[in-house]
Length: 90
Image (cartoon, rainbow, N blue to C red; front, side):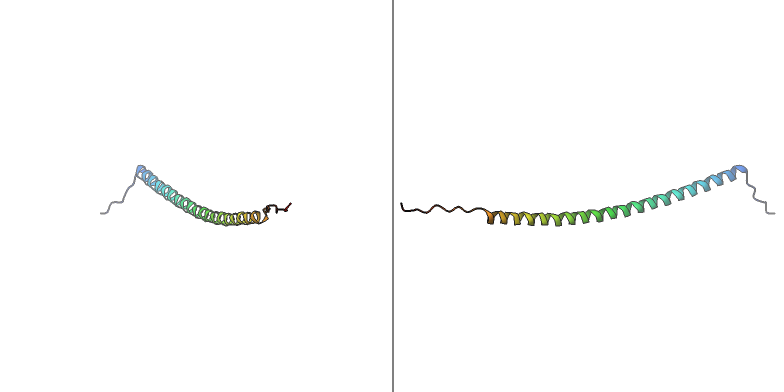
């Protein structure tokens, strides 16, 4: 004859503990994965912003260098020219 399986309170307590630990572990792993994905997305956004800032800095740098070269040309052309005095023949 097949005897019925009998569980004590202690066995049910351990089963509850194992189930609770498993559920907590699963929730923790899921939150860590979500946090990791969020940080990765934030890192990608920061890298894109950094690249955009570098491109903008390069563009303004070229504009500034262009303005500096124009200013130098302007100063060279606007520099007064002194001619030596002519001999008056006196």
